[in-house]
Image 1 (cartoon, rainbow, N blue to C red):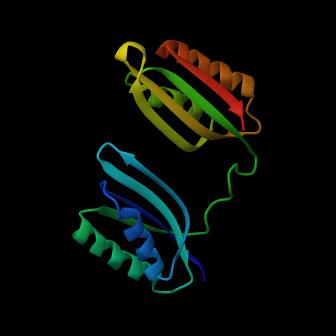
Image 2: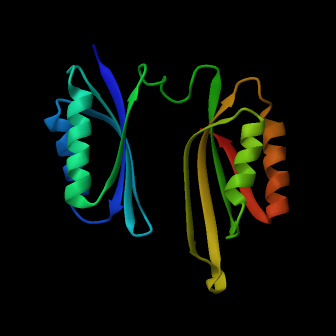
Length: 178
């Protein structure tokens, strides 16, 4: 029987962390099925979905994770999934949209736009943000969201709600089907 696990890890960025984590998964007779990795500040962060048919995979992964924490100063969380992973994106009954926001960096952009989506039962499947130097050196904020919008949601109403919140935040927002 196949078992599924989510392994998340973070630690001071350095070459070799991905190799260590991938080797752990391989050594535990597991397969690396999906991943997201990024450098955030000075740390490297990763979320991995892995699976194994081996009955002792969870124990072996947990033991190996503890070893990596000690040897490399990483923080690792292993979580077994109760069932198989959800269907691929977009989930049945939804349409996939991309939402881009950009403007002067300020607190509350993510919280405000994500609240508009949550209030309309829109599921965020991927979100990335970054702050870059803008014109004149002031910070320029960019956010990209991949979202599953329920098929019964009026896209025009969603667009208007996002634009209204963007006007309040003095940023630009765009939404488009993928």
